[in-house]
Amino acid sequence: MPSAGVGSFPDSGNPSSSSPASPAAQLRSADTRVTAFFYPWYGTQAYDGKWIHWNQLGHVPPDDIASSFYPQRGPYSSRDPAVITQQMEELRAARVGVISVSWWGQGSLEDSSLSALFSAAAVAGIKIAFHMEPYQGQTAASIVSDIRYLLARYGSSPALYRVSRPTSGDASTAARPVFYLFGSSKLPFADLRTAISELRGTSDDAIILLHSPKAISATRVGADGVYTYDAMSDPAALATLVGDCKSANLLCSPSVAPGFDNREAVSTGIFVVDRANGARYDSMWQAVLGAKTEWVSVTTFNEWHEGTQIEPAMDFSAAGRTYTGYEGAYATSTADAPNAYIARTAYWVGQFETAAG
Image (cartoon, rainbow, N blue to C red; front, side, top):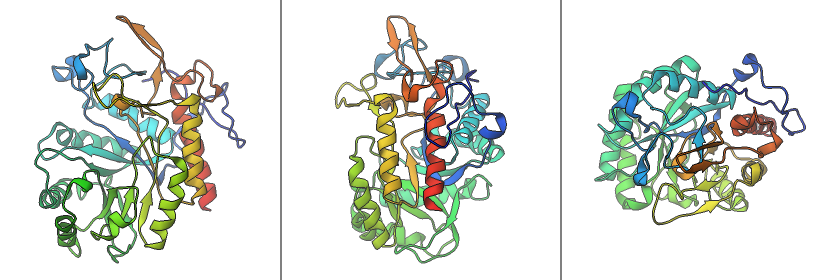
């Protein structure tokens, strides 16, 4: 468990570097209109018998990992119940009420990690949605099968996120589970429309959000809305998307991200968006609040490969590598720096609630 406390923010929005939040403050209500994308795909030699994901692109953990940042808890296993419990506590401290869990198909590593995650989330009061990733062989028909499979396994869990929200895609007022579909643009839209229509009116009916910067992506296939995920998107463009979705009676979950840095995880397609000591994250939150969005999604809680995580990180040097944590973000003290983005997220969730009335 990280030893540093989660810094608190006064009403002015300036971080307090001297008074970490009390345990009671850390457990204040999480907002289920705020979702963080969550990755359950990490493994360690000690816990899983091999390194998983931390060793991407030939890196040699634990000192050399496939990230420009270093986790405060060190490279961890996503199957370790102690780690999952800590992560749920951090999400509560950030006031994030829902995680959208990266899922790569039936029988995948991420699939096998779900049971422990659902158990811990239920205890912590965190809800779970699914981030349906574009696994090999995925089709519109297989997505329907996957949704039915996941609901058969977890449909009765108190941790499953369900929400009542009629949309132009589905007038149902029933509380429906939520699925974020990342690879929708790679699927024939006629096939996707047919697949979504198969779920409507059944016990497996669901709120389906497509990864897209345009509302028309949802309307043409009968989906319930869109989300952006993109950590490199222009904050100024989010207002138009939110407005278009409102006009079309669609859900919109524009994504806010602290930055992006995949230099240590890929050999091609390298991009960097500097965090600017928190200014980038603030600009995205300000944009979505100004747009009066209904939902917000955080990119991400723990995608370390792309440097979008808000999970606690620390300065660390070993094996010829030097990792820069969150020092300098929001003028936090050295002790509070690892949790700077957890604390700042909690601040912005509070602002979101105030703006929403």
